Image 1 (spheres, helix red, strand yellow):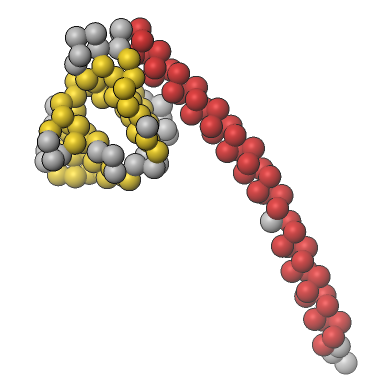
Image 2 (cartoon, helix red, strand yellow):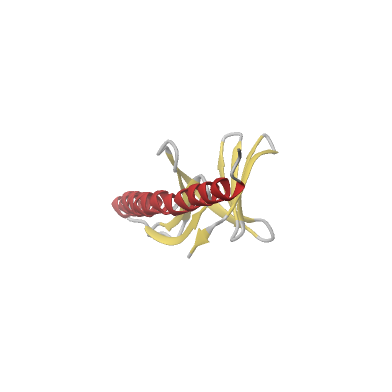
Length: 138
């Protein structure tokens, strides 16, 4: 005969075991988060070193889910867009202009990168191909 009370306690026990095991991945995630932060810091210093080697200084920083963007200024006061892909590590450095009402714009052939305090928009031939919200900036 089926004992509902025993089944109920067994089910409850299984749920408790599963609920407590959820804490284990969180500990792992914290470690991964620390590693990601260290990698982020390494990438930050890498780009800043690139700016420094060129005699530039970092004036602004923006981060989206996929990119880190540094705005650097050379000794003559000209701004540059420095973007690095979080996935591939590929980097691009382009002259930058500020357009009132648009944001800061960098152009690379048929590609245009527009960064504002709220988003990064990448266009090709005047068609938006990617847009990401800024998740961190200084």
